[in-house]
Length: 251
Image 1 (spheres, helix red, strand yellow):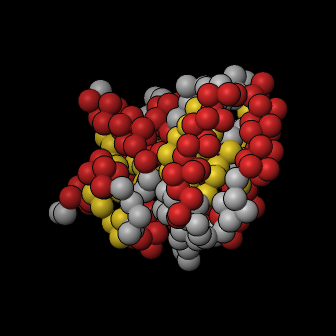
Image 2 (image 1 turned 135 degrees about the vertical axis):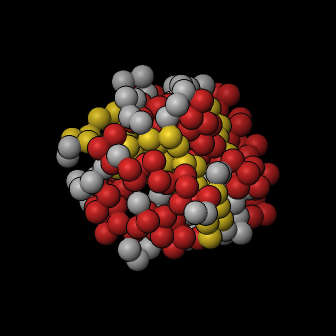
Image 3 (image 1 turned 120 degrees about the horizontal axis):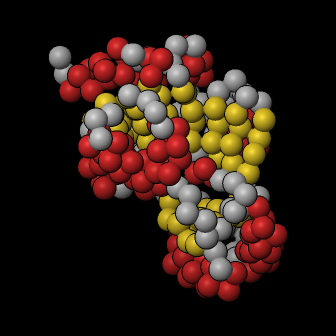
């Protein structure tokens, strides 16, 4: 039995006590220049729906807002937006209460970014957070990072790095690690599939859970842009979102 099969075996053995958790961008969808055009790759949605019929918990945990996720993924799934600041569960949406007062602050930062950054930097408003993309204008990387750091200091926001982008978040202690721990509470087995630095806390959470006796599998999805530390954090590495879908199908 290969390493992936061995890691997934205890998860498959007791679906009623297991969770299958996955990132979206770069994991279920290809990376694209315009984030609004990202869509799940072939087979991803069908695989998630089949899993949702068998497993205790199936969730997509993304840096995207729930308002986007629900346009490209079935609402019958559990959708977690902005790393855990937003949830769609049972058709009902909810914001993390500590983040709600920061919506207006993020809005002001968004307006400032639109006014002050070059036009070829894509400003992506997310309600409770803000992402500044320089994928199509890599020459602005240093400018965007400096602007984000300055704006964060002004507004009390927190800077997070991502693929060819910078994010500004409320100073709330929520990330994919805390979200994974919440979703895994009381379960015997958990799998997480991801591809970016924002997924590292999720991989770390699985390592902690494993130390307590929970069966876990961390799957890193390789592409040209994936940082080496993400690949190193995965128990196994698969190539591209198609490889991630293969993992879901094998479950």
